[in-house]
Length: 91
Image 1 (cartoon, rainbow, N blue to C red):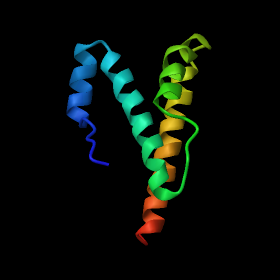
Image 2: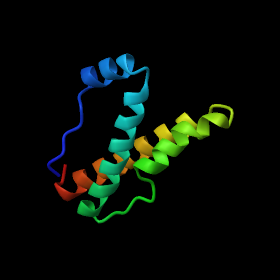
Image 3: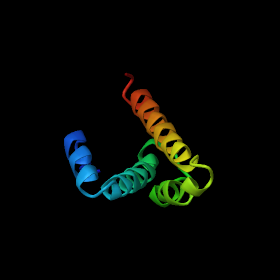
Image 4: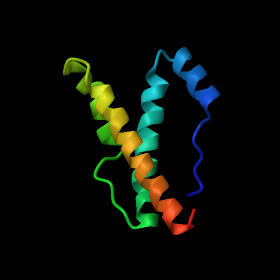
């Protein structure tokens, strides 16, 4: 797709320096990137970066369960894209 995601070291350092704000931005971008690339494999995701960000921010008010739901969305969509990629290339 021509985009690049920051590596783990940059994620950790920038999240630490910005007191966690960069992590929200990174998760938002990851959610949008997963949703936009789903079409390449014949899938559509209802959840995108905005959904992830809303669960991170406002879901924290629900007894702190929001971040768990946001991570579940990202992991679930990542697994679905990886499975579709593996099927497409017979891996």
